[in-house]
Image (cartoon, rainbow, N blue to C red; front, side):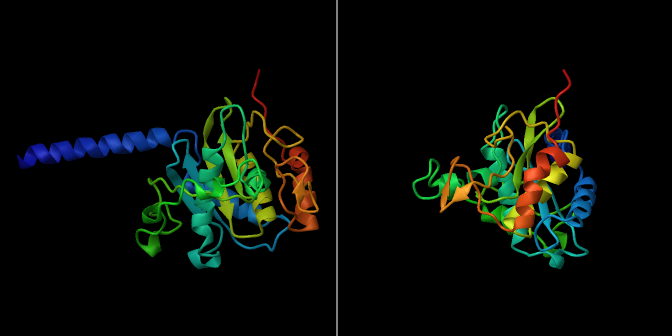
Amino acid sequence: MLKRNLTLGFVILVSTLFAFSVFADGLPSHSELQSTLSAVVKEPNGGFGFDMWATIVDRDGIVMAVVYSGDSRGDQYPGSRVISAQKANTANAFSLPKMALSTANVFSAVQPGGSLFGLQFSNPVDTTVAYSGASEAIGTKNDPMIGGKIGGIIVFGGGLALYDSTGKLVGAIGVSGDSSGADHNIVWKVRHILKLDFVPSGVSPTNDDNIIYDIVDGKSKSGWGHPECSDEATKIAEKLPTSHPISKKAK
């Protein structure tokens, strides 16, 4: 009986690891994500230059990687770890194979009178995933959130869907730790470097999921606008479609 149970346990473990590897197919490794985030944070992004958290989820909303850009987990806002995961969940949950929505795009839509008012109260974060495990493992390859469905909805800049070179929607990425405008600029650059920005279409004027700054007197002209955080962040964002252009599928 003991031998049988051990064999069964081994089979379950192998099956779980195999499934996890399938989920992770096409998504960056922990080290790749961390090095990319750390490099981008050092660039001008229109914010405070703070260190950041980044989280990636797969298409099922399962957390696949959690990293930080600083030397230790205390170099970033502790609360931004879970926010980055919720941003990733939001971008994944509300993007489709043919159209991407960034977390920045939904800001105006969820305000009172907006077309998506109340969305921010749906899909609550799973606190047993967000706050479980040893603190020492946070931000490592064994971050306690990995393998769990985080849930949560965040409706400001910093979350983008991920599309591979075939145009397949494979999940999403969220970053947090600076102003929301800088967060968007950072996550856009990170996605571009990771070559997961084969975005099919979006609601922005450039037909992608870039942040839209069109709020005048409290009203977004497009219905998808985001508040400005700084003149520098706005200028950087406006240039993103040319400085870090969306990748195109080979014909």
